[in-house]
Amino acid sequence: MILAKFGGSSVANSHQFKKVKNIVNSDANKKYVVVSAPGKDEQHAFKITELLIKLYHARPNSINFKNLHAEIMQRFYNIIDELNLDKSLKLLVTNTFSNVKKLSYAKLVSRGEYLNAQIMANYLGWHFVDTNDFLIIENGQINYVASQLRLANIMHNDDKIVFPGFYGVNFNGEIQLLPRGGGDTSGAAISNLLGVDKYENWTDIDGIQVVDPHIIKNSVKIDSLSYDELQELSYMGLSVFQEDSINPLKNKNIPLVIRNTNHPHRLGTTISNQNSSSDITGVIGDQEYSLISIKKYGLAKETNNMIAILNVLNQFNLEIKCMVSEFDSINLFVKNIEKIGQLEAFLVKNNISAKVQSNIALVAVISQKVLANNKLQRRIIDILEKHHINSFMFNQSSNDIKFLFGIYAKDYQRAIKIIYQSLFEKNLVTQAL
Ligand SMILES: Nc1ncnc2c1ncn2[C@@H]1O[C@H](COP(=O)(O)OP(=O)(O)O)[C@@H](O)[C@H]1O
Ligand SMILES: N[C@@H](CC(=O)OP(=O)(O)O)C(=O)O
Image (cartoon, rainbow, N blue to C red; front, side, top):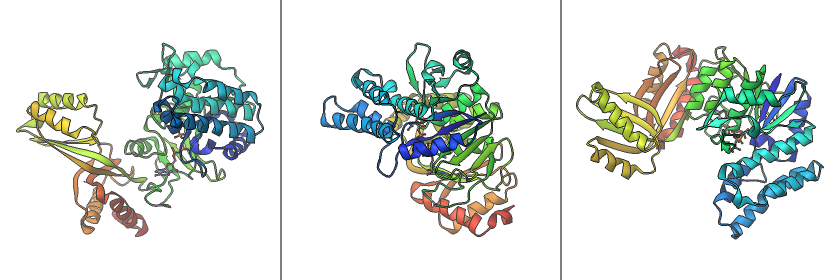
């Protein structure tokens, strides 16, 4: 049994719907489909989810509101008309958006996946099952035990089912959204609940590449990698697959295959408990960090100091990506802070002497094979020095999968290109081993 999740780019218009039908009909084992809301395509610069978020914030009856409302409905009408589907679906679209201002944020924003799953189910001739009826999300976390019980009451063995991604429901019956990109998580969670043999994640790229294609268009494609490597890649910012989606698959040893809806015969990238096919699986990062450097005599020795600092950061809801401590200092890399001034004032008021620096990038080289010896790390530091890229804070993860360093954001893309070219194009990976 296979569950296939189709991301926004794979279900953006009627043309893409036809590709999805060919893919699922070509393999009798594909029994479950999860869809996202229509994404971007050549005609549409915005995803439906983005338009729904704008609609929620638009002033009722303003021109902007009316335009957004019409644009969203028209995209669904076009898909239904172009596929010659039952006209009742158009009525469903109209009714869904008939009283937008009465809908909660989560309910409105989830309607993109809800309608797309209804339309896809009708087009494939499969059943529609609403995740609203079984996927329990409490405080942002999926409750697997409760979800399993509810799902067991809905499922009938031979059903072929289309589920909407991205949302579930809490115990009070209110719709709950997963974080943006959460369709991957829905797919992984439902794969776990149904105990499928394989989870296919269909998107618009042939698989995972060593470098984000926005930085290097055609870097080496990885044929296979381990769950742990993917976890590190996603944690460091890989957008192709959501970070929270890996554990539900790893726990049940369900292989994940990332495949291209536009080129369905290409093999994609397989993620399982097997070691990677490549020495290096990623040169990856993000340039939206701030560095908080805190100094105090004997700081790292006193647990109370640490607790006080973490409490302060907690009040500002900061996500710490990396923390390096020495005898009298702690360096924390956090996602860009909107209220830097307020944070600095707060730290001073609490007698914590700290410097906050913005426009920092974190870059990681991910490899399960070569980081255990130190040669690759030295090679990377040499490359950065040779190209006059100021780097600071080098950190190796305890599982020897990730080598991480900080640089200034202005050097981010150049650093990634140089490291990739030096290691791959000049074939230095093998020399570094
Ligand atoms: N290292 C990488 N390898 C492959 N794709 C990547 C990588 N980094 C970023 N991406 C981007 O991820 C995109 C696919 O993810 P996403 O936009 O969420 O797809 P979907 O619409 O199918 O959910 C690709 O189009 C690609 O631009
Ligand atoms: N539509 C939601 C959920 C999602 O996973 O979408 P996509 O598959 O297009 O990344 C979003 O835009 O966040």
